Image 1 (cartoon, rainbow, N blue to C red):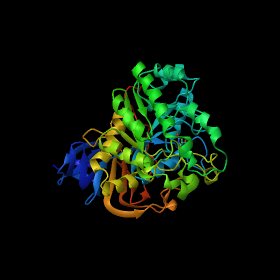
Image 2: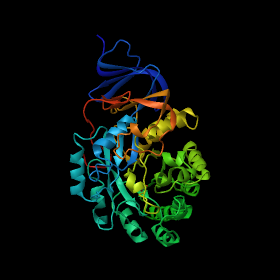
Image 3: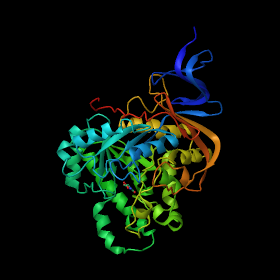
Image 4: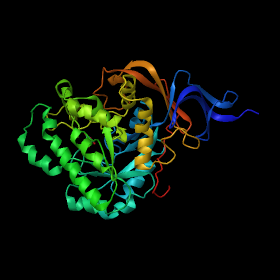
Length: 444
Ligand code: DOR
């Protein structure tokens, strides 16, 4: 008798942890059952993957979905719809929402709120503040928490833990890897008076300069070594930090953003406020260093730092311009374009966007196309050429700094735990997203 599956992916180039293979994939009850030649198998639903790459579901570990907040800019529903249209099966959502996620009550509320609204799976960050340091050990063990997030330099929202004594207290509360926004707050404040309203946007990278980022990272690494507490430095943006962090692999993992691999300072002249983000877009030297760090293995994860703001907020004169760029829907197309232009292999992309987040955050059942794991897949056509356009975005803010960019390589299908939620640009079914489970937490 032939084997029967709920879902069968036929004839794709399957990207496994051990290489790219021509294989079929059989799925039952939302899990991968087997890979190989399943020519004689039957299935309730079959997807023809001829000519496509079948990737384990790609994960964006760094998004700001703004819910609760301003639904005219973004919500859980629109942000996760954008994610699946862009080929992502899970996102990890940052805590600096209108009501910051800093307590168990707010976390529980947010977890419940995802139900029936999320199109992809969602991991939840908890924010550290000077008021909740004593609670962090308990908070990081709550179900579905991907990590504690510390803003050691100020950005959007009011979360901030900037001094060494408080940072050390944070690192001594709990055990899991902590994620940091690393810019030295004292240097940021000291340099602010050098600038006045209405100055050109490129001053953003002059104010938030290389030294601001490097100093922040050196201070964090000193305390991480002293306390032995694992760290993950988010959006590392300078050549100097990347070189420095190579000596801290015992305590530190590294994220680089798509923007810092794709954009340079010419963007300020072309896009004005639509190039402003923290840490800033910098010059070619830093972009080259980011690619060298991708290719020598320094980088563990790639994120979008999707941070939508209204056009009004982006068009305020600098430095009052809101910092942050949309990116959750454009991350995969742009990374695939980097693959087809030869900057990284498809296997390294999967390492950065699947195995990386699973390893750094301890995501369970995700990040690996292998029997027993969640049946999350991103179907990719590496030959498809398409232009990114503002009107493609599901995010109500409705703009991307990459409007007009042509990508070779495009996500054509998104499958979340065996459910096809996107095929050829069409969102299908209902919002099936669930909170992601992590190691070292209590289970929901
Ligand atoms: O540019 C940024 N925007 N960087 C951050 O760290 C926060 C984000 C936001 O939430 O707007």
